[in-house]
Amino acid sequence: MLLAVTLNPSVDISYHLEHFKINDVNRVSKVKKTAGGKGLNVARVAHLLGVDVLSTGVLGGSLGQYIEQQLDQDQMNHQFLHTNQEARNCIAILHEGMQTEILESGPTLTSEDQVQFLAHFNRLLDQASVVTISGSIVKGFSNDVYGKLIEQAANKQIPVILDTSGQALEVSLRNKSALPYLIKPNISELSQLLDREISGDPEALKSALQDPLFYGIPWIVVSQGADGAFAKHYDNFYKVSIPKIKVENPVGSGDATVAGMAKAIDSEKGGETMLKYGMAAGMLNTMQAQTGYVDATQFDHYVNLVKVQKV
Image (cartoon, rainbow, N blue to C red; front, side, top):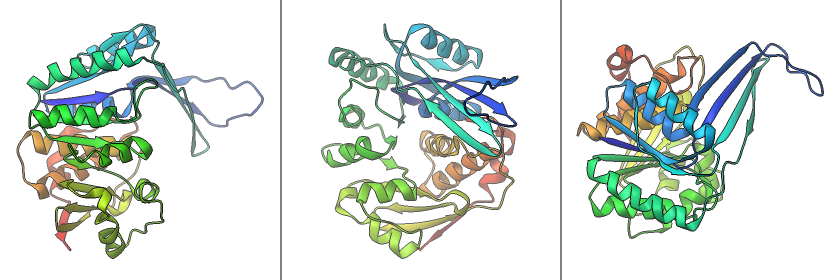
């Protein structure tokens, strides 16, 4: 079973406008609200791909109740730690071919909430074969909380896919006592992490991924959008190529990629198949207007179109 962690879930609201008027009234008729947060996108895509998934994280307030109701409607299993703090809204305004986002920071929790969640997570691990940890850390939790979750999973020999960025990722990678099985930075996040500009050139990526910061991590998958991905597995490197597709909405495709890779790990597939599953799921999300959604009937077809070359 996949255990998908979202520490800072949200209600994602999208407003579609032909023209976005500043300092004026904007009336919206096309509105969509979904249970959001990167980890919930992962869980939804994995669920659509037939994976047994359990979502967890921290939820509270009326928005938290709404998120759980949406998951129930989608027949997605969940066991959140409940608090008295209100969850957050994240608003995307789609206008003139652009997307303007207004993101609430979310609740502020306590160190006691963190202790309770670590215990909650540890109990859920007894059901898990793979864990995904996605997105930002909720305010009030320590910046090494992801490392603590990874340690708990490692104690039970459960692989973890960690998809976060910035300080949350760096702190987790410096905890060499327990490292994630896989991380999935993009070029920008990789450059930020190493504090230098990284190009998409294979030789430059090879050099970057051999930085001491990454020692001990079995898989690093650098997502490159329409150019596919570049991956490192211990001393081996792979270029992953994908076909040209019609892009409807690229938002959430990184989360879908994580879901595809988690599906492969859960099914005990090999590394090259894992890369193909990830890219196929990411492409399928990009082809849909809805974020964190795939047409599972096309999955096998697109898996076969992905090419993995050792470089």
